[in-house]
Image (cartoon, each protein chain N blue to C red):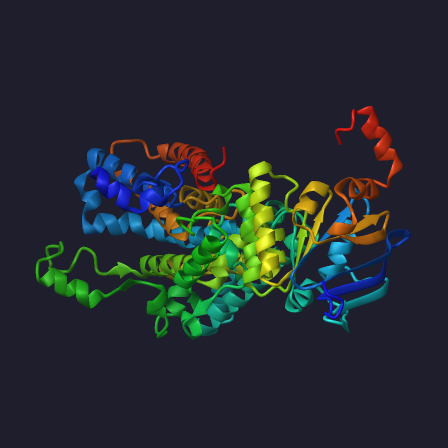
Length: 262
Length: 373
């Protein structure tokens, strides 16, 4: 957060067109180590396009994209992952019928043995999974139990733990709390805070200002493909943030109609 | 069992809302449970109703032989189903591979080793074709391979007439491989020396002239056991096995995690075609001939055996050893009915009934595994 540091990821005036559709029209944001940057925006603000661009799924039409201060152009999601940018999507990329261990190591299985006897090191995989889960306070009694038996919040935490374990420096979380109840949400928020304390940069995408305010250090507000600005926590209040995100007036009048409950 | 024990044990740390997972539930989570239960049931049934000759060594070999032929197909089908795809061309592929193999041996008169290589090459080609068509078009594999069920059966008929000069049967394979050193791997019985010794020692039954009633273990049974064990090991203990589960469970999630889904599925389609080819080679060498009806409707039996073995129709869950047991259930009922006074045609009724029971049972198991409410 101090200006002397280099941001882990920085984009300046990022523009992305899909044919005649202008999805991003000048987005600037950055994230430093040991901070949670909240990316706020209503539906259609361009959040998904921005995430996908950061994650290497889309290539920007124009604008600067810097990783550790160096300009980078990702050729695909693998490339972004190798650069330490991990994305946890809303659908979590988890398979309910498979065990926690198998999900945790999916695509990155630890191996033992040689030649034709090369096999998955299931014991080590089980132990790592159990340990990692234990660190975040989820007691997985049997790492071979199916992911389908975990609650939504637990699944979210497993997905985040997986990204952290495999060396993410920047973690992009796509609406991690959108489908969760109160207790589950606080569990996930608590874990996000833990991940930040480890020195990672977290980009937390949400349209819930309360959740953002609970863990965020800075807030970047996105509206109609543009960044409206970035604010530190002590520079903006929760209501001002809400109004900014919704584009101001309309929401205020609607909120008055409903008795100020939004 | 005492209270003190419970408090000191792991139960004291666990969440009070979670029921303790008993060994029973642990067993219920195994996908092959249904097949094992079915096997026990069928065995008890025949122990009670069938002529005791069924469970002598000769009787067991009698029902294990057809079980093995079906089982080699079923294990391949099970892997593919866990990987999230179907192959309805398995049965026709047996006939087609029989034609290719037979033609190579009898018409082109190449040695056995080369004939096998030619058959394998065709199998790889058909497997890759099935896979590419399924993945490129995005059509369900059910439809693509249904087309190949007819295409391959038709090609076999046309090819047989061409190769044999108008008949739908091709003969003379036994003579063609008579002195090939590879032949014992694919035909006849294994361990004849051991069985002769066992007969001499009076451990197994003999004919009056002293030769054993069972001269050895038919090689197809050995292939069946070996393939089932290998498939189980691959599925549960290797990276590729993890990828099979992932590709079938949710291809999109698998792809995002770096699993090469297209490559996994292509390999699985090739494996089912290779399983069909192996069955073709075994049966062609056994009978010394091939005909157009080889492997007829085997695709359905193989899929049913895989489903009895715990494979979900939606993919991502199942077991190869389950398909192994499922196939033995089939062999037992098919042959076992001849040891009883029951009309053999009940076999088909049983087949359908077993399928229904297995699917209902698997759904219950799946809910248990995923904790769906």
